[in-house]
Amino acid sequence: MKETTKILHSIPVDELTGAISTPIYQTSTYVQEAPGVNKGYDYARSNNPTRKVLENLIATLENGKNGYAFASGLAAIDAVVKLLQSGDEIVAVDDIYGGAFRLFTHIYQKFGITVKYVDATDTANVAVAITSKTKLIWLESPTNPTLKISDIEAISKIAKANKVLLCVDNTFASPVAQKPIELGADIVIHSATKYLAGHSDLIAGLVVTNTNELGEKIKFIQNASGAILAPFDSWLVIRGIETLPLRVKQHSENAQKIAEFLLTQDIVKNVYYPGLSIHKNHHIAKQQQKYFGGIVTFDLKIDDKEFATQIVSQTQYFKLAESLGGLKSLICLPCEMTHKSIPRESRYESGVTDSLIRLSVGLEDVDDLINDLETAIKSLSKKISSTA
Ligand SMILES: *Cc1c(COP(=O)(O)O)cnc(C)c1O
Image 1 (cartoon, rainbow, N blue to C red):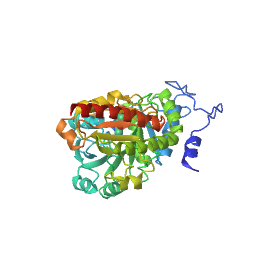
Image 2: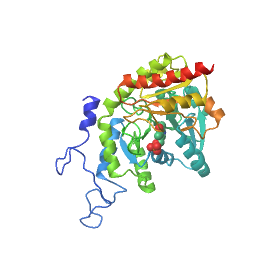
Image 3: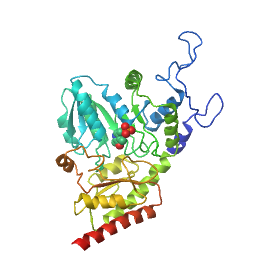
Image 4: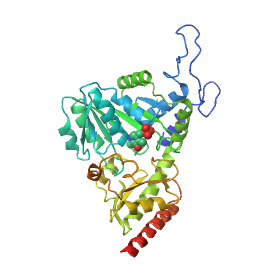
């Protein structure tokens, strides 16, 4: 069975009624036949049939053993960190998602869990950073916003040799484009808020484990800490995943064309897209990803925040907003939005210049999207040449 078929048909038909759409079990508790005698459900924080369908679906999609649904991507990350204890160390990719950085630094550091950040595009950096205290390697690939790619399979070998867990935040790629567990990862997390739900209409997170033993630990944390996903939001994520293969394919096709268009523009300095042969990690991306995804980032030859601001405020179809992965295209200026809290110097070290613009390429007709960008760029070029 091919993947698209598998996705649609691993969502079960309701046994009770034959409903082809998953029923939303909007309940907090379940009536028991006798004390402790129930149908496998006792309290909805512990178990909910709608959430269960989503959890099984994401496990299938990632080729893992178990899936767990959380109230946000960060709650999913939080659950994985809770596998550790005081004194443990994490080795993490250096341009990690800002919210994960904040969680590690401002919450878990005070509980004695420390993090070392390395440029994981060079696998050797990961190997060197591991000590006897390291219990977890944390990767994102592609990263946000400069789309750096790490060799997940090579790093998973390092993890196994050192008996360290490897967790991959697979949000940017989506499981349709990349399956970290097949490449050797132990755990995958998602901000399902992005491509999985896909319609910019909810916040959700998922964890997938490659063994039942790890799965039971995450399940325990999910129930003990309580940051579960609600039944209706679980249903929306299921519905989103039904069209995931179609969407990721189209997001990626549109993004490739937009990246190629941006390369031809005089005022553009760097274009970051893993599908471009000039991308620094293109060969690894090609090896481990089926699609290159819907995010394209670029900056300007004149590295001026005002110029970049003019572009992001002039596009009509690319709406100015944080987040990504929805049907409608979004544009953002990381230095003033997603990466505002990062000091300028360290921001520049990871390539996030003042003029860096991130596009979440949506599913509009790509000709319209290119026209939209071209109009904004032309208007800026005119302004630059008239002031020169
Ligand atoms: C958005 C995002 C998160 C956090 O997810 P929320 O659903 O916003 O809590 C984590 N990792 C990556 C890569 C993200 O883009």
